[in-house]
Length: 168
Image (cartoon, rainbow, N blue to C red; front, side):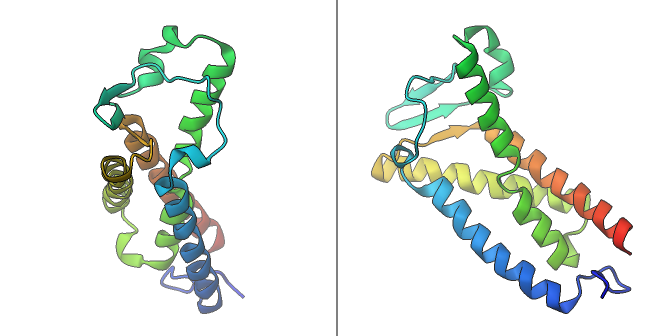
């Protein structure tokens, strides 16, 4: 059985699987992004340079903050932790955007994927600010998260394009 039909749409049995996985991953994103930061194991001593506090809101508003403040990172452990956070953010919405490309022909355009990825990321970051204001969840609004999440969405789109070419 082929993965895609003649119109490059995902075949029916695969659609059900991808839809189920998409629901599960959406729940996972909500848990990862909207629960209090204190429940996750972390390196307590890692403080990302460039952090700003506005009352209960914590933000990093400098684009490419890790590069801009590279000299302020105190040690290799902190540097590795910060880099891993950025890499993880690239792949946060990657599976979701890939699944949407598989399931929704109407978004299979670069500009649409770019916009959807950015808006998903902005929604996550804005919701985290609201949760901080309401419940002090200790979340951080980061401009770099907007950049890395959006990049992840674009990479998912490129992977979709590659999979479609290879399998059709």
